[in-house]
Image (cartoon, rainbow over all chains, first blue to last red; front, side):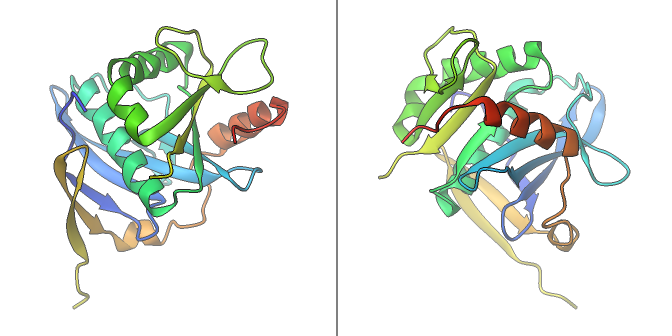
Length: 150
Length: 52
């Protein structure tokens, strides 16, 4: 990956949660990445955000902590570690807003070559009822990633 | 005193230290982003099939 990631992370032993501390211009802000099962047994969603008082993930929170790339790289690490442990699980993720989905799209696009060595990357796009292979700069609603069989 | 379970691994060529957190273990199985999950399920139901 082209970006540095947070290198100290707390986890649940089944890797369903990854906690780290975002450190930046607005201080230290606890963040959580989670993987949750969907109604499709092979698909798990990734959610990321600040941690609420009742331990939930608030993916609308705006921290503006100046560490966007480091945070995105940490999410990529979590996906890598999670799918190493559960290679048959596909990971579905989308931003909480169109702007955030666009940010994810750009980050994936910048690292696409490296990511594609490990993952098959698909996109949910308008007017298609199937996932399509992701290409740089395409307008998308969500990602679906599947670890390649090595 | 409970033993702290910690390991160092690499991802994308970088080292990362993972520490198992008992508080996170207690959250296992809980839906920690209910709205996000509901939204994802809604979108996934519209998809005809998954990639093979």
